[in-house]
Length: 405
Image: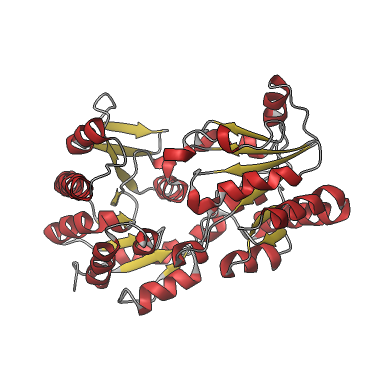
């Protein structure tokens, strides 16, 4: 199959914004496939075609509509009509440009990464008579239950998923939903969001940054990722009220609206610090300087309840015990493998109690750390997970019929 071209259609601005996609593109390119990733941007100064770290090509789709509306109304227009026009005008332009860019790739296989890209991907594949793989990183319709367009996404999902040749999800319950509710033609393939294996290391990046701010930390609890309501950031910050002296929460990421500046929400600046986002390829240096990792999801939809975050595996790979939700997928991993503790994400005292246990019980902490390192080395890494993709690509590129065949 060497030399076969794969076109990955995305709705993100950079491959590093979606680590599972980045890991997949790199491994396919290094296996001999010609990989092209289509990204969306509103920044005309960025190159339209770029070789990404010497591994694969990135083609940027420039959205004039998104740039125009963001200048006029910002990210969150107040009027329902304005929001409707902005959203669908931007999405219509994206589909037209994505179809054209995908066709120009002359790919042998087209991949849609998350639901917004599926119409354009299916259209290009149908015009080329090529197979389609749908990588559902999220239960996309489930992430929009509280916004205006949830019904649109649910209808789109149930209409288009039956047309694709193969569906991939990162979690078994999500695969079941894709099969039973979205109508996938074949049982979806479950590939966990594990990063490529890195040998464990220890750095001092975060403690040094804290010292520059006049904070001496004896125990660093790390949160890395998006800062928003669904990640229980307010509860996490509230939990710092109950931290012992020397225990510091460090958040690495960015947010919008009230989460763009968390300083008003921090009870004690000696116990919680926000650092700016770090590029994915450098993030492990920060992870390796923390003592434990935390990642919480509010139970507002099945996308959260059946969460499958790559961040948990990134924590584990650097030997960080994990604090997370008592949800099905996380319970099986964190409690089943004994790599951390599960908590009630809406109870700051419960979160703080889990942190206290990691600080005050060295034997428990050591066992979690050793289990995390062993599991990452032996089971939860991209090299092991990606082997199951070989048969998928061989089938799709070895004679599968056109879309809908």
